[in-house]
Length: 335
Image (cartoon, rainbow, N blue to C red; front, top):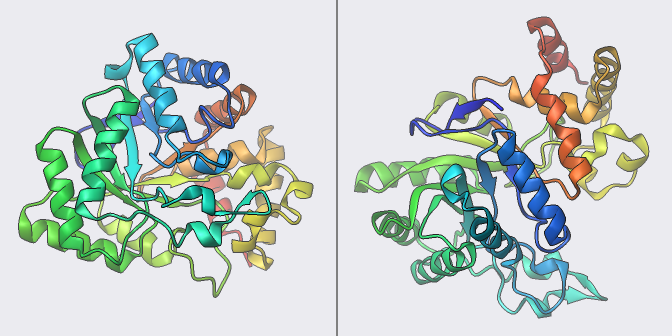
């Protein structure tokens, strides 16, 4: 597995990051351990988790399943030093048991209960994450959900303290508007605080539908911003949008398509499906390959397999070589 530089840090991370959100909850312990083993055996080193993963898998839990699973894997394998470990804080929720309706997690309620990125919250969160992960530090610590109710100065000073204490080596941000990202960077430069080196946003081959306001999906402005600031690397979550590219039946009525549906999406899927058949690969694999070919800005797709089969299905994307003409054909598709 090839590596790319994270921002301008000099750190080489896998061009395909392994998302561990489902591990320890939706994905059982044995399967999770096997996926981790195979990923690192294949040369992968970029693991991604968060302290809130997955409170919504079972009522009455507060998250921490994924971090705890990783901690057990580190204890068993002694491979902590072989990976670049990222986790996140700020998106746990207060009283998660109350964020359920009719036996299902209610995200409208949950989004109103984020613990946020206050200084004391971040201090407590990183310490709790380190305990679960059974490690003294993480390589990358994200603000998971941008918190506009807390002054940025408070959040950034707390993150700087976390870095100075050696509990995190670098910081990142997720689910954030571009103007906020620029303000964050300016404050860091002005005060000598560590600036974000990674931006984790939802990004895929489909483009969000016209008129949609969504803080988490990369738009044209954010893409342009990243192109102009190569010290900030895009880590793209949900790169294959829950696997909808492989199945027209799955796309029909799937909630994730609400952000993309329309003539543009239909036109891009048509070209993608046609080219995938020509290359004898799946559309999902072709989307990952297309993302891996992005150079300005660099994109690190973040896959989050539920099963070993899903993990193995993603790997062939690493070997797909696209010509400039094929890339242009994919890039120019759309209504």
